[in-house]
Image (cartoon, rainbow, N blue to C red; front, side):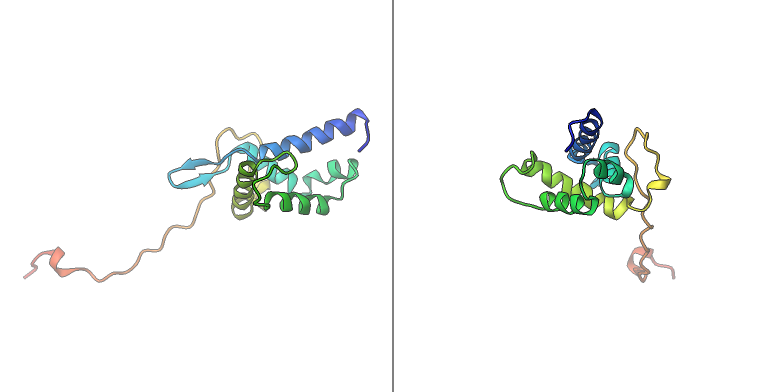
Length: 140
């Protein structure tokens, strides 16, 4: 890495994004919702938004992302790359939430959102159950 002030600044941005991925999701009922910091960090790190930063730092973006995923998915009890096991667990959860809810939708989501954003889920299908006549009362 270059010792230029720009390189140090870009390295700090990437480092902060990695740290932001360790923000625990907020529970809404039984459902975890990503914090804005974690969502924007995932978007930055796992999309082409960070390619220019990583190129400037002489990192190959796909290799960087693969290494980050490898570190996140390591379940050892040791600290790796400055991340303890709980941080890596939260990162895995955030990455899974981002991949399943937000990846590809980022153009529709504002960066400056103050509240966690919940993606609408399809409504549950109603089951057609035969009506229990004993509950319906005597209709005769």
